[in-house]
Structures are given as structure tokens and as C-alpha cells.
Image 1 (tube, rainbow, N blue to C red):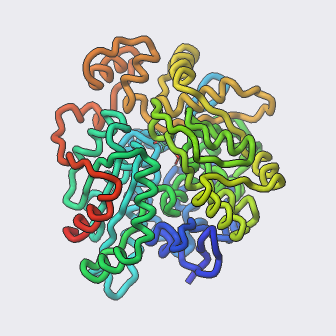
Image 2: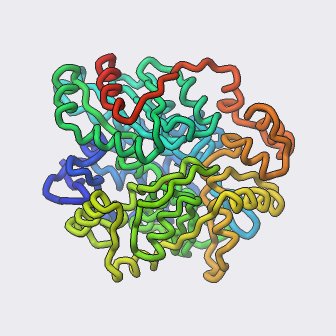
Image 3: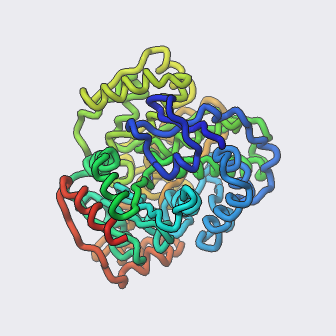
Amino acid sequence: MNTTFHSTRSSSKKLTSRQAIRQGLASDGGLFVTDDLGKQQVDVAELIGKSYQDMARTVLGVLLPDFSASELDECVRAAYGSQWLDSAITPLKPLGDDYVLELFNGPTSAFKDVALQILPQFMARTATGAMSANEKVMVLTATSGDTGKAALAGFADTPGTGITVFYPEGKVSEIQRLQMTTQSGSNVNVCAVRGNFDDAQSAVKRIFGDKDLATTLEEENGVSLSSANSINVGRLVPQVVYYFAAYAQLVERGAIKVGNEVEFIVPTGNFGDILAGYYAKKLGLPVGRLTVASDRNNVLFDFLTTGTYNRERPFYQTTSPSMDILVSSNLERMLYYMSEGDTELVRSLMNDLANNNSFTIPKTLLKRIRGLFSCGWADEEQVSQAIADCWNANHYVIDPHTACGYHVLEQAPRETGMPRVLLSTASPYKFPRVVGKALGLDTAGTDFDCMDRLSEAANTTAPKNLRGLEHAAERFTDVIAIDEMSDYVRNVSQQL
Ligand SMILES: *Cc1c(COP(=O)(O)O)cnc(C)c1O
């Protein structure tokens, strides 16, 4: 048994990666990490010319040591098959002198599919054994827009598993809302809550910490709770693969030689997407720089600039809803690794955050972090301009999240000579109104009218999964208060 996973806040209790995935969040509120990260390196040269699926088998084999090769093979086959619109899964394309890595060709048209197509496969292989026939898992997720649908699509009709998604009422795009409320499957639940994403995410974390609820669900229903948010280590590790895939494609195009460093510009909110790039670096990928691109909720920019993380600030609802986040959960894992595994420090910082809404890291730590991580951000005006600029310069349409990254890319001096890869996190067709407006198109009518005009102007086709929502039936209309979420979870767990 390979029990090396423990909390970012204490290393006393050790779990296997299987157990860590099943549990989601550590019982002290920390996130699961392993000190073995980087002990075994991935030989990048060996990946050149391989399929995405082969790369996934290799990288995941290192990151999830207690899964067997044949189990990982089954997981990879199920997750990265014909449900993807591009056989490269995450194709790399030139963008002027730079590159864009498309992460949105999966079944829900956002980058979350990379992780959420495979997480249910992992989860199905985490049952603890003898009584596995009666063990059920209820996956709980708070979503700022894209996670919810990707989780629903991944977990729908997975045996032994239920999925419950909470989204902030009125704070996701119309297409995002319809994607969730029309989800099929007998084990899915979707519910709007009155509040913003951080309120919903905090409430989900409280539900995970509610020991009485856990006992009741376990004893009465045989149900344990787990998470599909990017705090789950099973969500994080699949994302490491596409950094390797991007690098291999750069080598295959002749843009670099194995060993050359590359910079990644990453639209991020919860720090999950970019943290995966840091994991890739720890596994040996030549990552020269990781640049955080935020929207107007630029809490990460301020943190990386000053060393103080302060969540007491206005919350802005922007045109990039999936990055409208003030509490960036995965930052905790970066702090753990960058402080060389200082669980005491992480615990005290997180206590400060819980009690005072802010924390400040030591100067030496900030310096070390800034040696690898850069940052930038874009307000909505700049996002709109970036969408237009990118179209005018490259005849390539980007969504508002990717546009935050494009803005940062445009602003940054090209000093290093390193190839730069912009991670593109959503299809522009998910946000057809915002994108249409930025491109000067007519935005009268419904989001579907906007999709059709975008399609005509850009000469590309809207993904069927999005265009088809116009006539899909809505199944879920519940709206509840934050403090009703716990009862909601109890009810749906009883029906599992
Ligand atoms: C979730 C999401 C992001 C941010 O991802 P993190 O996990 O917060 O890094 C960016 N863009 C889109 C479209 C997303 O759905």
C-alpha cells in the first residue's frame, strides 16, 4: 500500500491516492498532497510522437501510484475517446508568434472535461472492498459555471454514485445554466442557490466538515460524500497531462528541442489549471514560467505582487464567470510545496484566512514563488478588446476567460525568447453574446441567435452539445438559500 497522501495542514495521517480521491478534502480542511511528487520523473523525450492517451497513462501512472497499469488504461480509454471533437484531445495551434492549447474540445466545451471525464472512472475504482456493493458516493460540487456541467456529464448514470451541483442563481451564463438544468441521468441533482460562488463553495466545505451529517448519511443510507471540485486530487492530476501534451506538440512542430523551456499563460481563478503546470514542472517538464491570468477579481494578482492574500474585497460579476473567485482553494497546495512542505505554516496561514480574511506569507517565500510565477489581469473592457484583437490579428475566436490570458500575453514584454503557450479554457460558443458584442456582431435575440451569427462571421461550427440546448427540456428549477443546502444534500442522498 502506497500511503503517502496527507493534508497540506498536517502530515500525521497518511492515505493512498485512492483514499484521497474518495475522500476529496482532508478532515482538517486541508488539501491532499504527497511528498513523493517529483521523486519519480517523467522522461519527456519518451513522450514525443505518442498519443494523448499514452501520455496520460505514463503521467497518471507516476501521480497515482496505487492504481494498476490496467486500471489506468481502462480509465484513460473511457475518458479520452470519441466524445472529444479532436483526436489530439488538447490540440496545440499557432497564434501569431505564440501558441494556443485548446482544452475545450470535450463533451461540455470547457477545459474541465479533461479532468471530469476521468474522475468518475477513478472514483468508481475507489470502493474500499468487502461491502463495496452497498457503498455509495454522493459527489457534491459548487460551480461558478463550467465545473457543474462537466461533473454532471462525467458522473451521469455512473453506478454507485450520485452527483449534486449547486450554482449561484443568476451568476452563470444562460448557456451554462441550460447545460446544467437539462442534464439527463437518474443520479443527478442540480440546484440554484441565492449567493455567489464563494458562498456556495464555503457552504459545501462546511457540509463536508459536518460530522453529524456524515454519520447519518453513512448509517442510514450507506452514503459517503466526496468532491468533484478542483480540491480533489483526482481532478488535479489529469490536468498535468496536457502540459506534457503541449510540450510534445511543440517539439513535433519543430518549435523547440527537448529540454528547451516554455512559458504557459493560464486563465485561472481557483489556481487549479495553473497548479497542474507546476506539478508538470515537478515531474521534469521544462517549464520556464507560469503566468497567472485573472479577471477583475484579481486577488491572485495582488497576492503574487504583494505577498498578502486578502479576500475582503468587492466581488465582481464579470464576463468570465468561471474565474469570478475570491477564495482560490488550490493556492494552498502551491504554498505547501513552495514552502518545502511546511504544514505548520500552511495551517497558520489558512487560520488567518478563516479568522481575519487575509494572510501574508514570508518575504523569502514570496521571492521563491515569484521566481516561477508571473501574473496579470484584465478588466471586462480589456477582455472585450482582447477578443477583438485576437480575431483581427489571427482570425481566431477566443472566449472571455481565454481573453484574460490573451490580454496578459499582449501586455507582457517578450523578453525571454521562450515559446509562449496560452491555455484556452472554453469554447467561444459558450459565451456567444459577450464574444459577439466584442466582435461587433448583432447581438439581438437569444444566445442561440448570437451563436448562429458568430458561426457565420467566424466560419466555424457551434458544437452540437451547445446549439442543441435551444430545444432541450429543463429538468431542474429549485432555488434555495445557502443554509438549506445541507438539508438538500440529505434529501437527495436518501434517494440515491
Ligand atoms: C474553471 C475555469 C477556469 C479556471 O480554472 P481554475 O481551476 O480556477 O484554474 C478558467 N476558464 C474556464 C472556462 C473555466 O471553466
